[in-house]
Image 1 (tube, rainbow, N blue to C red):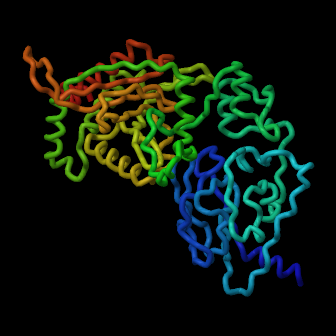
Image 2 (image 1 turned 90 degrees about the vertical axis):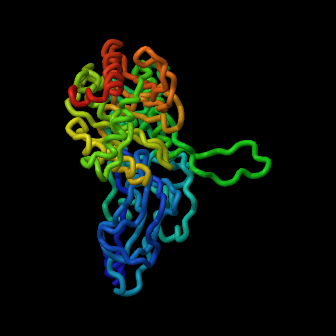
Image 3 (image 1 turned 90 degrees about the horizontal axis):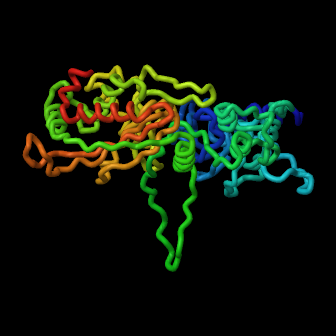
Length: 467
């Protein structure tokens, strides 16, 4: 009789685990719960918003029922694979039996120090994040319980680790592959024998700084810090936790700076005719309903210049010692958001007409500012534009977005004295800065590319003749 009650109760409750919402991610922070215990949910309903190292993502529940328990409060960082919500899928069928308690932990002397991974990259991840105690903890598995315990409680059995497979997370495996390092030859220093990024670098070239493999996020400048609580009287410093998108930005900055030999070139351009073209386009009926600004013309000029200098649209493949030239342009646009600076990109931008490009830019910026940019929208970029001029600065020396070989910084457009047709006149002037990977873009190619962009902006009619 007891067995029947336990079985029906187990079938009555379903648990939703933190998914890997981006390739290779191991954890995510719960930003906001949209439901509470007792609420009815339906298949496909969004129950919470989480933030990963790539973006903020809304998570839909994959079944119907009534929320029984939220396993973690807002602000908690949760490992991929851990249960975050339990749902009663058969409400009204009688009182729920008590849920099974987690097995008592092994004596401290026998337990290994730190958190132990089960299936590397999918079990518990190394983290120093402290989780706040939650209500009702006595009726649910501990927040930091290993994935093997969670699986056993769910009736799935305990996963085994192949003995011959070195322990390393997906980003570390990718780094080892990129550097041509056999993980079997690396001495692990991580908790539980896990190979860390530092271990891979030590095996490649001792004393080399760690280079995180963080795709997609922008790396050229930090976004404004979100509002924090008032500083207490007498306080001499404030500590702000680094996580989510901001953490990825910091890692990517280090990774890009120490892997690609950066070169930055500058050119100051008279863009008076470009500004006149922008004004004309705003009145063009074909551009009705889309936002027209200088960035649109600059983006189109860059696409035309890439067509004339295709070697810029490439990437260095360290593992195979090859230059991979891309025959498509996924144009990244750096966007400052409340959660940090991100770089979503316009897929196959080279095929878009000016009205289509304007619509794509408008949608990209709006989505980014709303915090709804998906990881897929930030993946696969080939070249980036960062418009630092909107902050009133003349230009900058941007760091390459990981996986790309060129980034164009656009400075503020200002009215300045300029020699035009032999006379000093007030003209609209800006400064462009192009940073590029000198392994595959030499000075000649980089200079020609930047000069082409400048020439188009000085004489924007060349958009038609060169397109």
